[in-house]
Length: 499
Image 1 (cartoon, one colour):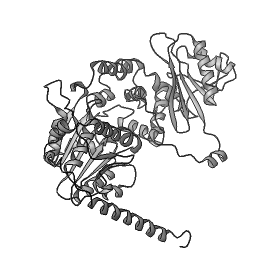
Image 2: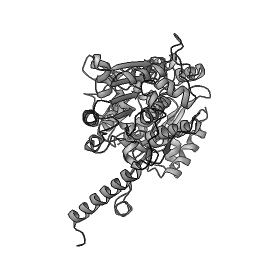
Image 3: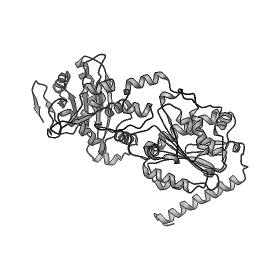
Image 4: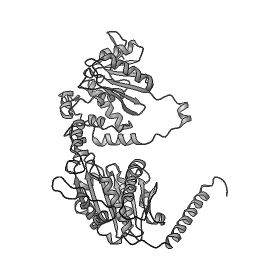
């Protein structure tokens, strides 16, 4: 075989795959089919009760078993959609649907799709399937492997497999079953792009009559995306269910109280993650939920490192943003970091002592390798900025209420710095998986002045809506500000030199 010939290598790989499939089919043909579960084909609730020893969670409002209601619709209809808040048993529901469909239909296939494979499918959903297989009241003829759930020795021909929707959509269309039907479970559907969702429809169209689609997700922003379109325009083609966290017996009231304090009742996070409603961006929302979700999704993606390129390139710039609060029981002192195109909150604490704050910033500079600290000098932050400069640290003093570098567009520095953060998020900035930062950013509003300048609402207005000060958002905006944003190089003296 000539070295490096891609065509020969490709034919060899196809031949090996065909041989493997033939061996699996031959081995499977010699194994009798377990038909004990066929009688549950139209009764998934009985399968869950009899075989898994489980029962449905109920609604607080009327006591109805909502998980079993979803499964009943899945048995009777081809398309079922569930939007919900957190904690209502969505992973259990998906796992029950997977095991029921797979075992009640010989030679069927289940495809589990999600934006992230390692976290959402392998670490959450397949782990949940494994838990129910262990807890089953009868021995289930399935093996839960790293990449699939397999019935007996039938290999891929009778199995459930997971796939990320971030790859090639054509791979999704390749899943079909000529004999047992296909169930597609789309988890966290709000993060699935339209091209992948269209490929799902293609896979179902080529899999015969007994093909079903179950989509489940906490909602995101309104107005776009296949999950939103289902509930806005799906009509009679879909059986739709809505389960708020507030209506589920699985969700502890204490958790609801905690989230009301952390996210703020009426905030976009409360609306989506508790009430299970789509968040309308509305007029004046500076950070739409869809923008924040996309940036957070980028932040979850693994960083592919090229050690040689990193050694040859200049190091990524690291900047700290410091929001100073002189309080022991109110607002938080917060330090955020911006490293290249990634940002995160490094530390929060309450202390009225600005020298303690200075010490923490100095320690963070040392551990992070930051080359610049941008400090909010509104209120008590000026002393921290001065002391950092006296200690020899490159420091920029920034006043949120001060003037903007572009006064024709922005009313003040606060509007300019947050609009700059929005533009970076629209480009490539990655956000961490930080619910409090998410709540802070999504709560901010802006408006236009009579002269056409962009102005953010007052911090007191945001505090009333959120129930606290958006300290994390302030620190991240400082850390991610463009080099030319309004500010002053702090010399450690009373005067400041414009940069």
